Structures are given as C-alpha cells and as structure tokens.
Length: 247
Image 1 (tube, rainbow, N blue to C red):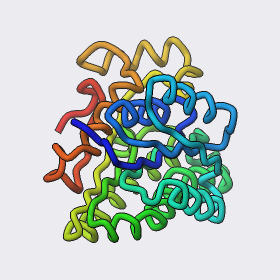
Image 2: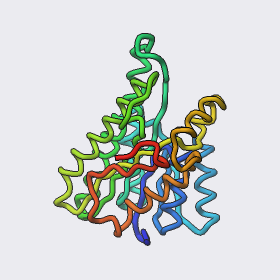
Image 3: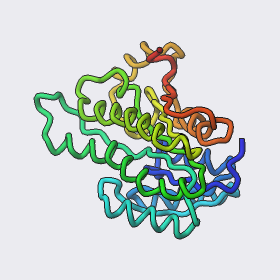
Image 4: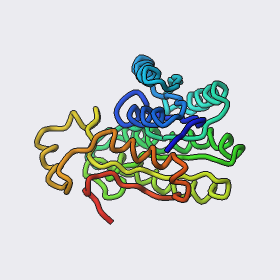
C-alpha cells in the first residue's frame, strides 16, 4: 500500500491514537497535516516523522472552536494545495453517571467528539470533490456500539459518529470518496492509563485476544482504509477491539 502524493489531515495528532495514525500515514508516503491543541507535542510528532524521512507540518487548533477549524484547515490546504485524507480522531471524556452529569460536560464531549467531525469534514470536502478522490475516517469507539455506564455523553458522541459516517458515505460515494469509521476497543493510551488496575484487569477478562490494544493496532486499520486497496469499502465500521464485541 502506498499513499505517495496524498495529503492527510489528522486531528488529535499530538499523542495516542492520533499520533500513531499520523506516523502510519507518513510511513506509507502521505504528507501529514498535524492538528491538536498542544503546539509542543505536535512539533515533536512532526520531528519524528521528518526524522524517518516523511513530511509533516503542524496546524494547532482546538476542534471545539469552529473558527479555529476553519482557519486551520484553510491554512493546511493553502500549504499543501489539497487534502486527500481526513482522520477525525480528536476526542475527550467527562465521565459521570447520567443523574449527576452536568450539561456543560455533555456539551463539551458532544462538541469535541462529534460536532468537530462534521465541521472538519465540511471544510475538506470541497477539496476532495474537486479531485474526485477522498478518504474520510472517523475514530469512534466500541462504547458507541455497546454503551458504557457513566459515559452517556461519550457513548452518544461515538454512536453519532457512526451515523455521520454512513450519511456522508452515501452523499459522496458517486465522487469516488469513501467514508468509514474505526471502532477501537480498550486501547493503551493516556485516556485509559488513568484507569485503576482493577478496571484494567476486568477489561482483559472480556477481551478474547487477552491483551489491551495499542495505538498502532488502530493506526494500521486507518492506514488500510486510507489506501487504494480499500476503494470498495465505504459506510463501514471496522472494529479493532480484540473480540470484545463481535457481530
């Protein structure tokens, strides 16, 4: 698989799954526009990509802010000339039981995890339509498929991403643009490292493969969906969960 000549825009690229996706896309030949809030961490990822012979530039922004999305993606298109691949990865959690969940925590999670994907896609779609080629990949979650107590906001945002994926896939398929989702299960990231050893141990019990996933496991799936080899796959949710949820 080669992505030589392609330009990828990755949100939440400063760490975890986003960083791994950016590295994977760069390894296979894409130039990568790195997006996240932390400029220092973005710079480190960009240097890592360049040290390996790849091409990357940083476009710091907060996906919860519409104007920052517009300005950041416009700057990336000006810099690279186009965007071929969009990875909507940025996400946050504010966990709480529903009866205690504050409206602000609901809104912030939905805005960051779901609304940002709609806004980013809206900003890149013109470039993809113009060249009649594109790959939109949304990072959802196994909890968007099966729910999770204490994560009504997070599960709702990730379930919404699945619906958004399928709607976009139908809208743009005639222009040779695909839209798919990757649904990670329990992945070893900064978001999950704060969980207790007891929680992690219980999680392992429901994963048939018997291990916690890595960001690279997710990145390999993203790399495939971005490739020409996946050109006949659209509107699909690819589960990367070690068998935690099947069917």
